[in-house]
Amino acid sequence: MKIGAQLYTVRMFAQNERDLGRTLEKIAAMGYEYVQVSGIGNIAPEKVKHLCNANGLKIVLTHNPEHRFLSGIDALIEEHLMYGAKYVGLGMMSDRYRTPDMFDDFFRGFEKPLQKLKDNGMLFMYHNHALEFSRLADGRVMMDVMLEKFPADMMGITADTYWMQFAGLDVNDWLKNHADRLPCVHLKDMIPDGFTAKMAAVGSGNMNFAAILDTLRNNGITEYALVEQDDCYGESPFACLKKSLDYVNGLPGGK
Image 1 (cartoon, helix red, strand yellow):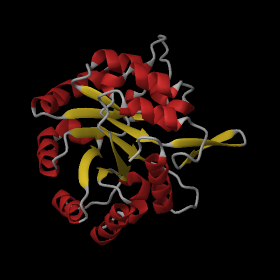
Image 2 (cartoon, rainbow, N blue to C red; image 1 turned 135 degrees about the horizontal axis):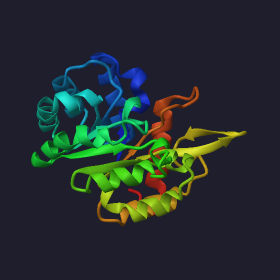
Image 3 (cartoon, helix red, strand yellow; image 1 turned 90 degrees about the vertical axis):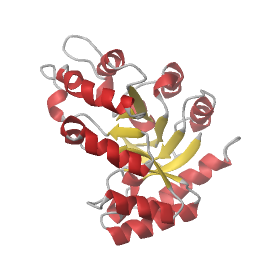
């Protein structure tokens, strides 16, 4: 399993070509070799690939707008062939699907695009938040239905450890029980703040990442664990990425 950086963490510093180049240089200097492209500005994919190559970084996963799957899948596939990335991600289903009236339409709309990705040697990766573990009015758990509708060779789950914890799951158990869905995961810690929870650099919060990383390293499936911190609460996101990487590398079997 290889450790990478989710560029959404540093999105504020990746909104134009010049800033993205400087940001990728900083990430490479920390010791990262793999990145997920997400949250960056309107920069030509060829430029993104060039800047990653220039800094010795490999693109392994992306997040893309929903409409690119539904009405632009051929261009999306070509883009990922150029990137050399086989994991094509969606950050979250849109509001219209997160209702009892439209939830099942998600599967009808995405079935053909997902099959097309599979036919081209790629895999659709769905990134969870907490909401996918809630129940619909008819009692079904959304995530359970998603896993039932799309098999593992058509849909992986970019398991976000923070949001799983937020949803009240035993994160390590869920990862053990769904290993076939986990070629990519997001590493994100949680720390309590009064009656709320905050995101934290990996190893800085209360989650048992020693056990989580051991599970991921030994499942034979997970290729990339990508560090992500959506909100750094005023701390430098670069410092947070470095802190997370240092912690992971410092664990037994880490580097």
